[in-house]
Length: 456
Image 1 (cartoon, rainbow, N blue to C red):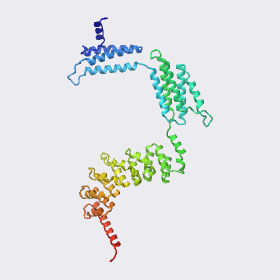
Image 2 (image 1 turned 180 degrees about the vertical axis):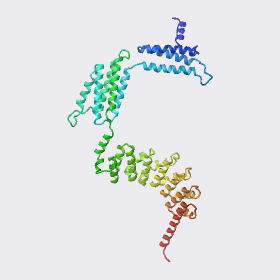
Image 3 (image 1 turned 60 degrees about the vertical axis):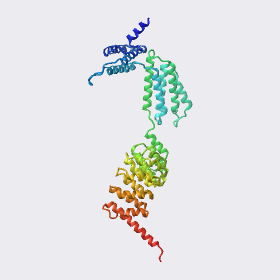
Image 4 (image 1 turned 120 degrees about the horizontal axis):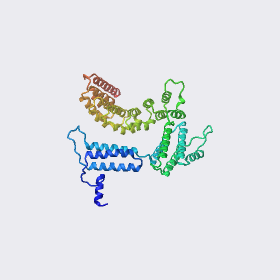
């Protein structure tokens, strides 16, 4: 065939590699795609499907090289987009006609193996898993003529001890996974052809479906096993005639009463219901036990508000959490987080937080500013006197000014008390009340000083 003949043939089937625009039109491209559909339906082998794919590739190439008209009316269908959509749909149909392949079988087996080894099975679920793997091995042996099932039986007899009833315990997941690895190797060695071996491949895929269903039905480590674990740890030993339901709540309350933070943490780690998690966190808040610091600090680093509250209740025992909590001081988008953080920092009492909290006396949210003022009062750092006094003088919100006066009273130095006592004639009752208490504290201090002064 001459070069001209080659070019003519390439041009006719749309495989020409030229960058020049083709003479294709929406009608001619659609006509070519019309011919693809019956070819796709008639395809019986992978080679037939490859031929159809080559035609689609040629149409797609011509479509990309063709400058199709763009409609002026936005409501009118764009021929280019319509053709691209049609090519895409035909490619999806093409892929649906392909296979199944041996690789589909091995992929499914490997997925089941990952489930097998990555799941914690209950005492009841273990035998069910072993049965599912054994049934799958039998099916593979029947289809491929292998002896995988014999190998797994031998492994079970050799590696697994008898259970309490004298019966052989099921093989462990790692041993069963080895059986599945052998199945993968057997399928690969069989070199199954998607055309010539369509029936064996389909039978193996059906067997993998049964395997996956068996694993799905087998019982995993669930609440029953959690209860058994708690029982082994002695969590239920404190129960007598309990009134609360579930019994875990009664046990939790008793361990809290006994100050056993380890048992409360055990319940928190084991009982994942929202109900019990809430009660466990509430118990840790009330206990304020430094033994729970590490667990609570980790939760606080994830912005858990109850954990932050519990750290605050620990006071100085949670001093190592101050750096973490200071990071949340500027979280203006989460006022709830700020409120619980300010209070916790105040209760912990570290002067490291003074400046960060003092800066928040000027924040926009007048529902949060009082928390910053009160936190400064709890810390008691004298450096907060001036910003608190300025807040008391100039803030436009009564509750904020009252909180500043309260904080000055908590700091309790003469300078702080005098700054608060200057507002005894204030029209605001809340502010006047704090000012009166500050004035009384000054008078008491003067009286004590007079009493201690030596007489002439």
